[in-house]
Length: 304
Image 1 (cartoon, one colour):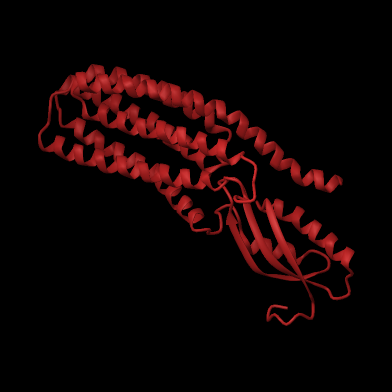
Image 2 (cartoon, rainbow, N blue to C red):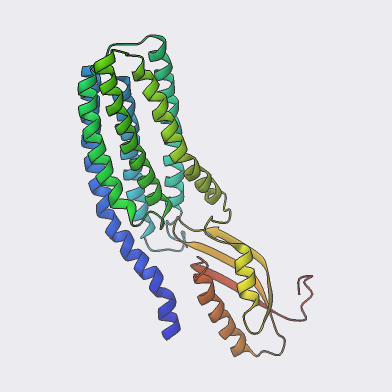
């Protein structure tokens, strides 16, 4: 019983962490939505594409935060006869949607930047700098909310990377605003838009690859199949493990099914104890739900 409680403890701790992060999502949504409104008004007033482009990107981030929060809420819904894993997979779907939304934002910003470079328009540099300064504060503070938990979940990491990128972009807009004020080189507004595109793309590319992998039930990045095979094979009474299938049930929960070959001299209770040990072992390799089928040493499978 003690081992059983120990196995469930990491999961319970993680659920508590996700509950705590909900407040960060709500705060981030409110702050960023307010900043989007400020950027739209200021962008229209100053005729700044950089501000309008950043407003569009920040609005995408607001949508991303809302979707991520919704996915977390759905992931807590208990499994039922029709959805035996509950709605945990929605966290992966949301992460993929968020990555695709950012690609759409990149395309729209690129199109407008090209038009602006071909026909530069006057922009008020000081207002650009002041508004972007507000963006540095808002995005920096919001990104800090997600810093501690960014390695625990793809949606949290995505939110952190996007908000950090926004803060860096705002720094670039401040610099551009100051340069435009003193040099009147209005084409810099279009150039900074391309820099925004580059920053967004770099911060999104790894997220997109990871979510695509999980969407097609690929082995999650934080799981090493060879290390699992090695660890299981070293367990007393185990000959080897084969027919391994590993996939993500959500952005935080991984599952595994496998056939485990055990020594033929073991009785039923000894085999059950080995399965108990292996499930505990697999939790240390980021496997949270394991289904193991045992076979005797003299089975007919080639790996035996």
